Amino acid sequence: MPAMATSPSSQDGAFLQFPKDFLWGVSTAAHQVEGGNDNQWSDWEKAGRIRSHDQCGKACDWWNSTEVDFDLAQNLGINSLRLSVEWSRIEPQENCFQESETATCAVFDCEGLYQKQTQSC
Image 1: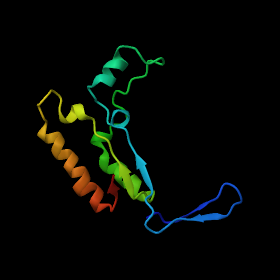
Image 2: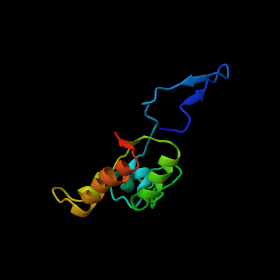
Image 3: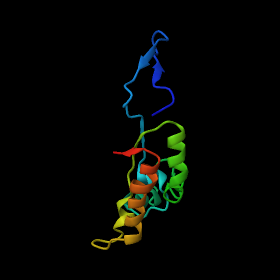
C-alpha cells in the first residue's frame, strides 16, 4: 500500500480517496526491458524495419536486475506488478524448454514478489 492513499483531483485541488485494498500497479513488456532477446521482434529490428533503426539490445537488462526493480516498486508503494517474460527465453526451440529460465521465473513470483508483498497479475 502506498504511503499516501489519496490523489489530488485535476479539477479542483480536492483529494480523491482510494480504498485501502486498492491495487497500485505497473507493468512491463519483456522485449522492452529484459534485453538479450532472440525472437521475431529482434529479427524485425535487426532487419532495419524500425524507422529510427533503434534496437532493444540489452534494454535495461531487467532479467539480470529484477531485485532492484522489485525494490524500486516497493519503495514507490506499488502493490501490483504485471510481468511479461519473453517466451523464446523459456522455449528457445520448439519443445525445448530451458529449466534454468523456468526456475528463474518461479523465483520472481514466489520469493521476490511475495517477500515484498507485491501481487503479480
